[in-house]
Image 1 (cartoon, rainbow, N blue to C red):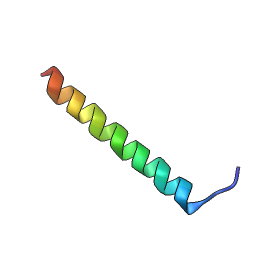
Image 2: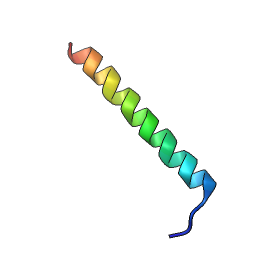
Image 3: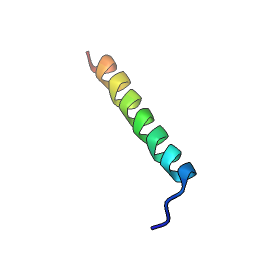
Image 4: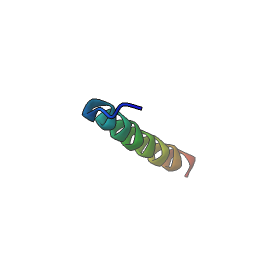
Length: 30
């Protein structure tokens, strides 16, 4: 696997968006 800063940023952005998606989903469930 080749390490690229761009792919690292993409994975971080995906993790953040996943967290925010989960948070918004939790707020909708309440």
